[in-house]
Image (cartoon, rainbow, N blue to C red; front, top):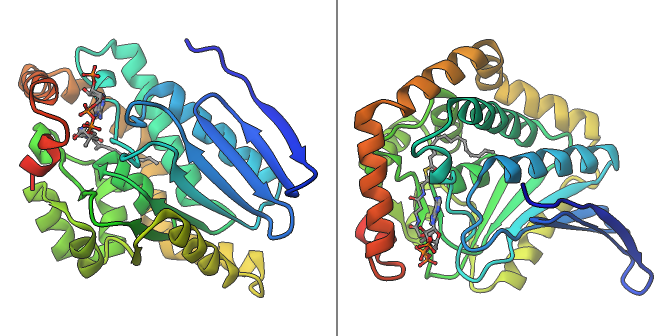
Length: 286
Ligand SMILES: CC/C=C\C/C=C\C/C=C\C/C=C/C(=O)SCCNC(=O)CCNC(=O)[C@H](O)C(C)(C)COP(=O)(O)OP(=O)(O)OC[C@H]1O[C@@H](n2cnc3c(N)ncnc32)[C@H](O)[C@@H]1OP(=O)(O)O
């Protein structure tokens, strides 16, 4: 396992508090109380077990520190998050896969129920679990015209679990979610805005961060308690479903992922990832 470390420093010139873990950097602006969290796990910010554990640890820390809001973004050139690390699903060790899926459920629960408002600044491609990471925030700003976002699980021969699908339905509605999930379509920035996958678009990352901050400033005069209660009530049925069905969801996934048909599909997909020229894959799956 990677050596992990956490360090806390305050920069007296910028009045920012920095929390740095090996794959995540967090900077809290002392004046506004807004944390900017940057994912930095080259090459593609794929979500493996250790990365998910870091995300949970950081969310707990931000909660304890009573930040006023969080902006989640990527430090990589052209990828926000490539989704689940396919290596966790291909030829899995059942014990690790059980831990991975349990940690994935816990990450989603932590992010979807934060006591502070959250924004994702999508500054790169964002397929499948990457898109879900963005959907689990309260607001989404997508940068530029060069990236694709969507749920391409079907193209890998797998499907998204109920709690994942319900999260999407809550954002874009039942019909659009069904078409999106069954076709595996990856959307351009404009298309994503049109179907409501993202709330705003803008030309560059700096303007996107400003838009994210602007959204978070809406909560300056809102009681944190009123914010949290409203969000909990709004999201309650999906959250409760997962809490009630956690073990069933893990057992099903561990068995399903190991089936020969799914493993064959993942093998073919991994091969296509290697054989296609850069970025061809995501354009192929449009
Ligand atoms: C809060 C919780 C959040 C969410 C989860 C909740 C529930 C989820 C439940 C289930 C459904 C989710 C399923 C998935 O997410 S499956 C993963 C789907 N992802 C993809 O299909 C992405 C595939 N990748 C690409 O299309 C391109 O890599 C990308 C456009 C992202 C980047 O292109 P670029 O040209 O910049 O890089 P590449 O040369 O293609 O890749 C570099 C390197 O990285 C490897 N790679 C890419 N993606 C993944 C991945 N998802 N997992 C593991 N490894 C990945 C790629 O093979 C290259 O490796 P190498 O050849 O060894 O350098």
